[in-house]
Every structure is written in C-alpha cells, then in structure tokens.
Length: 380
Image: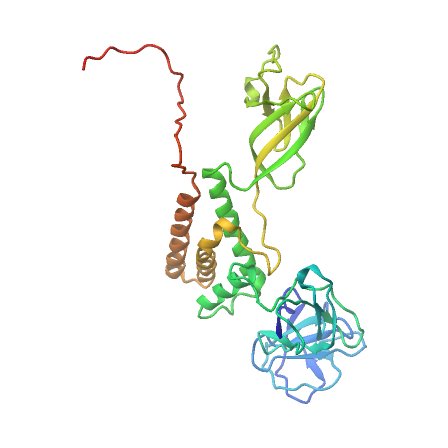
C-alpha cells in the first residue's frame, strides 16, 4: 500500500537566498540573511519538486553573520539566488489506523523516512496495508526528536476529485508556468474566494440554501444577540413567550418603530439594532426567538475538505477562477479574461440550477399589491 504525503514543508517557512554559488562538498552556506534561522533546524536548498533540491541540518551553534553551518556536506551544486528555507523538520513519520478514519493512528515500524524535497511528495510503502486502513503523517526533526502535529487522514483511495488539494492541483495542471506563485496557500485562497462568491449567489436566489437554525433568548426589553459565528441573514423567525406556542414574526424597519406604538403577541414584529442584535416586539416578559438563517460559507481549511454537494458539478469553475487569477498575476490579461468568463458562465448555470423550481403540484404567485373585490364587467 503506497501512501503519499505531499511536500508542503516550505510553505510559510522563513526564507532567504544564496549570496554566492554553492558547490557540492561544502559545509558552509553563504546566505543573504540568517534572521529566523535556528540552530539544529533542517533547511531546504531549492524549491520543492525541483531537481537537486536537498535538505540538510544546521549545527547546534546559533547562526551568525552571513552563513549557515551544516552537519554533513552539500550534495549538489546550487546557483546564486537559490532559495534557502528553514523548514525545521527533515523526516516524516507515517502512522496507521486499521479501523479506518474512525480509529487511532499509531506510528508504523520503519515508517519514519527522510523527506524527499526533489519530488512532489514523500511516499511510504506499507507492505502489510489494506484498502480499509487509514493513515496520518507528522514531521520530525532527527536531531532534536521534536515532532509536529498529525496531518489530516490519508487514505489508499487518495483525495476526492472535489477536495481542496485536487482543485489546487487541477489549477496547477492548467498553467504552463506557475513559478511566480510563491506557495500553494495562494491557490487555496483563490479557491475559497470563489467558494464565497458561489455561496453568496446561491443564498441570493434560494433562501433555503445552506440554512441553519438557532434559538436566541430575548429580554423584557425584547433584545437578544445572535451568537452563531456562521450567521449571514435571517430567513424566518418564530417567537415563543411560554416555550410551547410559537408565532411567526414579521420584519419591521427600525425607523418605522414609533415611541407610542403598541404591539400584540398575535402580531409579533422584529427589527435589528446591529448586525446580530435582534429586538422582538412586543417583548412582554421575555422569551425565545427561533431563527432560520442563511449561513456564511465554510472555508476549505484542510486538503481533504470537499466542495458543498450542490457545487461539485461546477468544480471546473473553481479551476477556471484560479487559472484566471494566475494569468492576471502573470500580466496575461487576455488569457485571464477568457478563464474568468468561463468561470462566470459556470456560475450563471449554477444560479439557474439552484433557483427553486418545483412542478410537482399547484403553484402559488405572490402579489405585491392587495387584491380588491372591484371587478370590471366584461362581455364575452
């Protein structure tokens, strides 16, 4: 069972550059800046997935001056301006759960391996593995023994086509050259930008999309605070004063509330005195407002996180949006516009698809004006 952990160790790591060419066999690395480099940490010379990139360990002496001292010797020649990262860890520990993702991952015998910086990922072959097993990995410093937190679950099936990492890799595969993109964090940010756009579009045309429910207590003055972190806007509010009987509340703009206005429990009203501060009228002795609300979008924070189900059929729009942003960064506006137009076209299809349409029974029409009993006589 071949398990792969992608090489992301340089993302967010302190970075400097070689101040002079570096020859193989040396033990001193001339750099432009030693700030944020730490004794006994692992360093990587060259970018990940680049030929002849290598990882070495700094000595136990604190870096000083304009050079980094390493244990062992440099394996390859490196040109001036080659990047040098303080990545801290030089090994990966692969861990296994025989109960799948519901179990606990424990370190495998012989599962501690050196990171391979010149490849896209570092792999481990679990010869006794099974398709039902699940895996995790953590970083380790071979000198200090310090270990990082575990990764997300790794499965033999690999990542879903709709996962964050798959979208990221699909964007990369669409680009001829993305060396100007410093790290994968940029691509993940673009994915979440487009996810926010798609979510807002869905909420705008379908009030039943991405709904949440919360109960909010209000005081004798009718004031209550919505504390749900994912609250976007309310779709419907029910109010109870006794905990058993509910009345549907109608929104009233704040500027329409007059000092001498009188409200009854049979005609409940609500207004807002801030983004999340709710006021119920009448307040009576206090009570509870049950709020059905549209939620803000949930970011894709982990590589295994997937797009919402309704957006999976439009995953290409995420790739097109990322490709467009990359072209704009590379000053290729014409290519960026073409990719952005494709993304927007997919979004239009998504909006059309998510707009409620139900032809299974009688339909209702909402009139904006009151109907009267005054009919004109017509001869047929």
